[in-house]
Length: 344
Ligand SMILES: [Zn+2]
Ligand SMILES: [Zn+2]
Image (cartoon, rainbow, N blue to C red; front, side, top):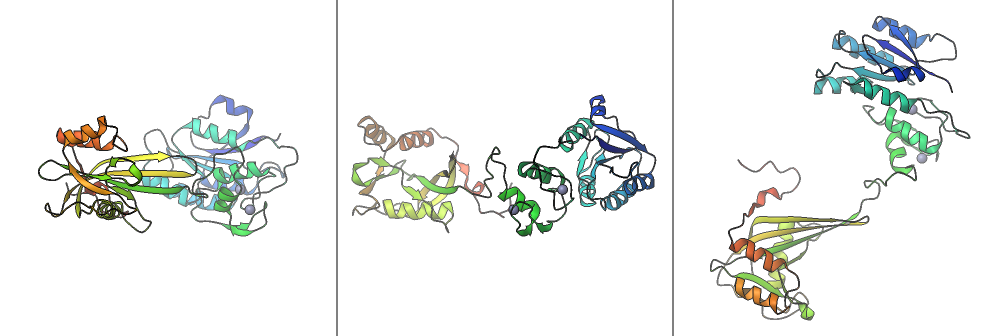
């Protein structure tokens, strides 16, 4: 197992146990660092890691060093800021200039060195198409890509050593060559999303709108499946009209229920609304949507519950909550992506 060669510019105290991993070479200036990268101490060695302390080096000089050092693709470049001094814009500049890692802690560098120092494994034969490091097994290449190249300022086109496709290699490896022991990337295989909107509609006399479900399933809140091109509010209002025959203004959000499972995700919005026209009659002619609908008092809903005529507890829970003056959330919390924050 060959040791790592780590060049250090400035004051960085790496934990003592990194002595077992790496030979450390102190350099005095950015030009010394670049000279060492170009001409390592022995002909067959190379600098595995360049650690630059930002404590005394002006940032523009460091950025210039990172840009030039990046010409050596195999080196893992670390910008080390003293604790509490790293600014967001500095982090962005360093990464854009080619740094692999920006940190305030020597422990993080130690962790990275352990990751870099992968002992060679039997039968590994894939070289990284970006930096030529390796050889790796497929899973090792996946981990290497994440460590070394996922921060690169732009995607890199290359031929995949595993499947020989020509592609944006970093994201390709991430998605297509996931090691079997890693949890599946949900972006590569997104789960199906089912969105439902249920509406607690309350009339000014305190009655709540209930749907009598078809096939004798009992009474429940009007609402249903949100279609793919609909907003939850539009979908829920459409379902209230179809199931209960009432045009509704949806004005509040009571709860969002999120039910994850490996292949399907169900999201349910419990909404609050009032009828657009208090005189409008609930639906009475049955169809596949429902048998009909009714305005019910809280006491009547309780009676339905006692008689086992509710499809679920939701009407009882939410009618009770609203009747007790429970808080009704601002409907603007539920918005399309890109909407501004609600007014203060
Ligand atoms: Zn690489
Ligand atoms: Zn591939």
